[in-house]
Image (cartoon, helix red, strand yellow):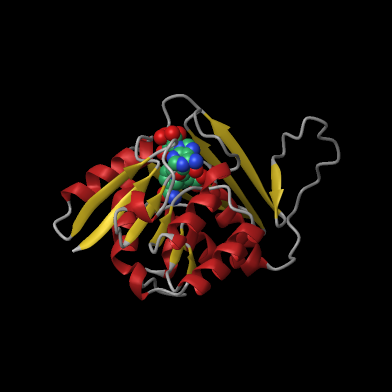
Amino acid sequence: MITVAVSGAHGRMGSTVVQAVSAANDLELVAELDHEDEISTDTVRGADVLVDFTVPAAAQTNVLAGLAAGCHVVVGTTGWTPEAIDSVRQAAVDSGRNVIIAPNFALSAVLAMHFAALAAPYFESAEVIELHHPNKLDAPSGTAQATAKKIAEVRGSAPMPDATEHDPQGTRGGLIDGVRVHALRISGLTAHEEILLGNPGELLTIRTDSFDRASFMPGVLLAIRKIPQLQPLTYGLDQVMDLPGR
Ligand SMILES: NC(=O)c1ccc[n+]([C@@H]2O[C@H](COP(=O)([O-])OP(=O)(O)OC[C@H]3O[C@@H](n4cnc5c(N)ncnc54)[C@H](O)[C@@H]3O)[C@@H](O)[C@H]2O)c1
Ligand SMILES: O=C(O)C1=N[C@H](C(=O)O)CCC1
């Protein structure tokens, strides 16, 4: 039996994780923590794994507190900087516990990112559109950032055709490692992304839709089950799945 504490347990994702862990035969929910609860040896109640779905401003502190409390930590909270990830990596090494940070636990999103990285070297143009519910705090989404970085990695510095000279309102979107990213916030949506890859006369569109937060749960449970066997720091659920072409 793997014991689990959830941080952000009253939120949209945290409450869904509480339900999913409670329903799993091999997992035991031992603590539900939220905004006013300190993360400590006492409050995690001996949990093997702390799962964090909180807010970008709190995630790093929560992960470090979880490691100090003796937990492996599964992180879904977005908004990470490379510096914050490095500090977590070092803390994980020092603690002898492991951390996985995944910007998206939905299998369709993980595969969409993977397929985009496989396809990107074959296309002149690549842009990312992410579409989310309007209560989301961060833009662009962690998934869009990770997607753009993966595309940039495989494309290198190959230029994309774009004659735009005048865009005073910034309507061409943000640039992440040379890849354009556009963030939409629309009532009624949950979490969606399109990756558009173009060549003269053709377009490949890769799209992932999370219509319900249940879509993230198989990935979260996989990470909880696998984390004791992982490296001190893993970034992305693709690193845990046995994907072809990696
Ligand atoms: N990785 C993924 O697959 C995935 C999927 C969905 C959302 N997310 C990310 O998860 C995060 C949470 O999303 P959400 O929609 O559940 O948000 P939410 O606002 O519904 O929930 C956040 C919860 O965190 C709590 N909280 C705030 N500060 C805290 C602190 N210091 N300690 C403990 N709890 C604190 C809030 O009270 C709230 O209950 C966001 O960063 C979002 O981008 C990731
Ligand atoms: O609802 C959110 O907030 C989501 N955040 C993640 C991101 O920023 O990529 C994953 C999708 C849902």
